[in-house]
Image (cartoon, rainbow, N blue to C red):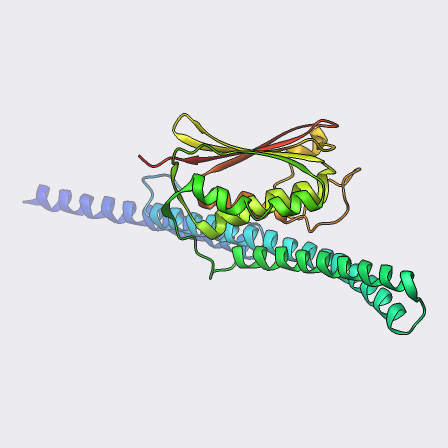
Length: 305
């Protein structure tokens, strides 16, 4: 009987001792977690709470670490968006104000009779071109804002892409002829069934062609549609001044302008819009260019069936 009592007392003492050790270890871990959280609160987003898998507080530590990682990711995205918007406002200030000031200057000169006869006609024509460039710039900005808003949604549907492409390009033929740009359009008669957003696809082609006209100084453009493996491939090729190698890897970035020798017009958003739209339609776009020998944009979209 006495032996049983002694064993019970020993068990109780050991249990109390183990409990004290556990409580002390948990208190130490909680203290470490508190210090880590304070460090994170003060801006150290790289701080993590360390805990062995068998520790009592391990699930809490892992959960807090996941929350911190998620918060840092969202904060990084916010800062990137903030920087993009700042750059965009700077670009707006220059790229809208400058042509608008010039436009007003030409119209004022014509209206006030500072110029007359042929000079007045030339001023009005220059003002018309400036207004057209400004509208084009604002259209690109509108498309970019719309594309990056929560309201924008891609509506993919299976379409006959060869016919759709022909319908889009036919509107460009008078523009090619007016600007004396030789063109070669090669679209086969056989159907190409692809899942596309028709408005987005039209915007892709229009932006690529406008990019050739506005920036490449080309006098020839070739647009071809073919089948490549299980994809529809579209190439837009010009014989313009090309793009420098160091610029080529950045051309789809927002607000990037590679204007060394190229036209200074443009928002730096057109190709970024193209890239985003292509990705939203499960496609890919790449560019190949040799300075002095032109540029080719290559688009791939998965075929249906």
